[in-house]
Amino acid sequence: MSPRSRAYMAKQLYDQRRDRNQIFGDLADGFGEPAWDILLALYIGHYGGITIETGPILASADVEEATAATYVRWLIGTGCWKAVTPIILWLAVSV
Image 1 (cartoon, helix red, strand yellow):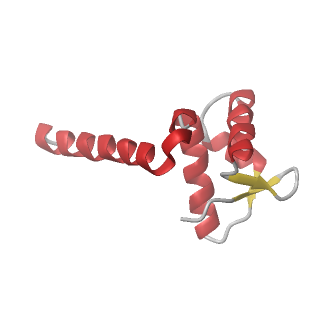
Image 2 (cartoon, one colour):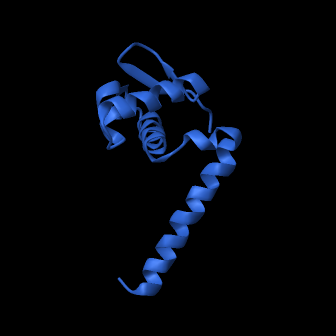
């Protein structure tokens, strides 16, 4: 991959991160990497028609389970997620 291609990719990633801040407004501070990864996994599962269980979602954050669980609680508290059962979670935002 050429440096120009890598720069283009870096720009796309940067722009996507800025979009995240605009989309979530005041909630953007809570969307560090683990929360963002979890939300993306939920979104993909939701629109793919897949029921999302807590274990795989915690693993999708690629952090310690306790850390991921903290972000899950935060997402539920903001209303971005709702717990349907203790082990099954659904995306609660409308996009």
